[in-house]
Length: 256
Image (tube, rainbow, N blue to C red; front, top):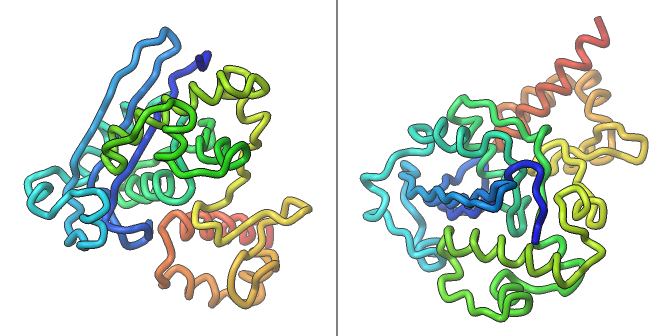
C-alpha cells in the first residue's frame, strides 16, 4: 500500500468537453486518503451554465436536467480548495482533462490554486510505461475487477486509487511513497497545462506551437509585443494566458 506523509487526493472530472478554455466541469469526485489510512469523499454535480453536448451525455450520462439546480463551480470553489489543502494529487491521464480543467475553473473563479507545492502522480503514466491500456482495462488487469460505471466520476476516482495500490504491489521498483513513484516515472516539468510553452534543453521557455515554435517566448515578446496581445485576446486557456503574462512581466522587469 502507498505510504503517505501527507494526504493524497484522487480526482476525476466529467465535463461538457475537453477544451479547458471553453468547456466546464459538470461533475467532480475527490477521494482523499490520509497518512493514518482514513479516507474521505467529496462529490459534486455542477451547473456548467452551458448546454451539455449529447456526445458528452452519451459518455458520462449527466444531462442538463440533472445539473439545472446544481451549484456552479464558483459557488463551491472555496469548499473544493479547502478539501484539497495540503494534498498531493493523483489522476488517470491527469494532463488531458482533469488537472487542466480544475486549474482553469479555479482561475475563472478568481481563486489561486497552487500546484507548485503539490506532487502529481498520473496513474496512466505508470500504466502506459508498463502495460499500455485504458482505465477500464487497467482496472481489470491490475485489480481483476470490472469497471461497470466507467464514466461515473466517483467510480473512476476510486478505481484510480485501487489501480495505484495494485501497481505498487506489482512493481516493487516503484516503492510505496509518492516521491519514490515519481522518481521512477519522472515528473512533468510543465509551464502551462495546454503545453503551448515548453522548456528547451537549456531550461529556457520556448513556444511549442505556431510560427514561433522553438523560439524563446521572452525574445518573441520583446521583438513582437503585439504577439502578446494576440494571444491574450485569443482562444487560449486562462492558465496559458496567466503563464504568458508571468513570462512577459519577468522579461519587462529584466529589460528595465
